[in-house]
Image 1: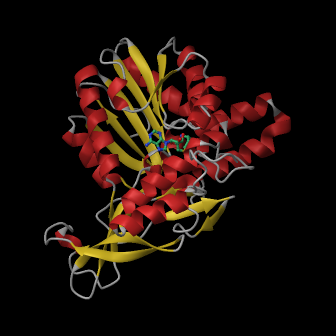
Image 2: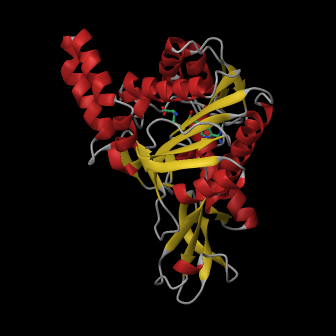
Length: 353
Ligand code: SAH
């Protein structure tokens, strides 16, 4: 795999040098640098890569997300609308959703927010007419936005606080040679940790992802001003909660998140309560979160699977397996959650009861 570094110096060496110069760095800074490097030069998805996502498991996922948004757009009176996806990976979800849009007579512009040059190239092959953005600021200012983020927020940096014998400390990353390890940094002022967690025992960890909240809030402001809706799907929980959810995945196996920065995928579980609060703060109406299992079942994934199997009987075992992976309680069905956000006055998205 080619390195994204200029000059050939590894990211490990750069991070170690930065730490030697200015001291241990906040976890969120380490995670941001590691993931920017990780995604820049590779396609990490699929059996030959590091992990597999819902749209890569089955076309049913993107088709149902697309059908949900197309239905909402129809009930909203078919306004001028753009499709927006954050971190679209290989572009598979968007391509599947566009087929559902076409059935409903919706043919939106496709706007992709993606920082990775390697994945932009993959997306261009799947979505030749797409328009790319480095961040939210250049998205169209007019027209309703139909926004999707699948396994996007989990890749954004989290910061952690850890409880010492008495006080909470920021969790920072120190270096020994080119080995990294988390250590306790500065004491954080009282009131920073939610009161409900303040009595947690020593060793407890709480996380926050300021970047996720800022993005959710900014998108909610766009929805409130322009109309539209957003579906955010990810694995996560309802905070505030104690727990260290930072994890590294490489070749479909867990790895030490402090090893080989930039060579493995770093993620953290998404706090959907905080994400929902960010959406509400930005002026959007919030729906859910609910489990991916209940959401896909409500949208009729079982019917879709039956129809696909009827048309291609030779694929029926594979389709049944995909259905189980997407909705099974022991698989993605319960861990993954779906949060909806809509412009005030827009109807409630199907699936949210
Ligand atoms: N949504 C896809 C891919 C998930 S992987 C799927 O479900 O298959 C995470 C995606 O987010 C990748 O496309 C990655 O390049 C992108 N990404 C990560 N951090 C980003 C950032 N800060 N801004 C924009 N895109 C980012």
